[in-house]
Length: 125
Ligand code: FES
Image 1 (cartoon, helix red, strand yellow):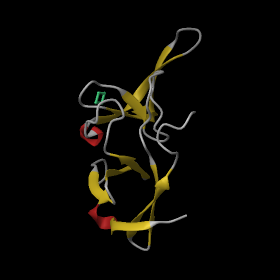
Image 2: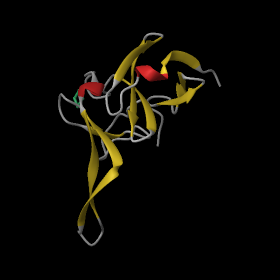
Image 3: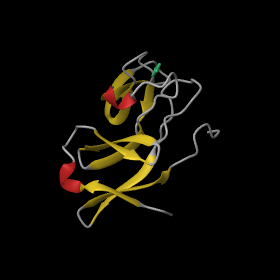
């Protein structure tokens, strides 16, 4: 597994995207409540810079139709047409084509390291 040193960890601000260039891809890095995320800054629908969208929790509807809000089910909403993706695995929240590309990411020795894509884009679920 190849890891790339992309920036010093002190460059991250809690809850704010940091956009970096990784090869030809623009990648957003987010530190949120102690969890680190890395996603390609490209919406699979029509190419918006998706890291300009909001990160929220998610409304869940149980089989008995009870509605709850899960603040930990982190969801990234595209700023253009509001498609939503699970921030942890890139899957669309509702059944739609396309998947947000997510990367492995870690902080080590005061640096942020970007790993390979968690799944190839377009791979079946
Ligand atoms: S470009 Fe993201 S939902 Fe359309």
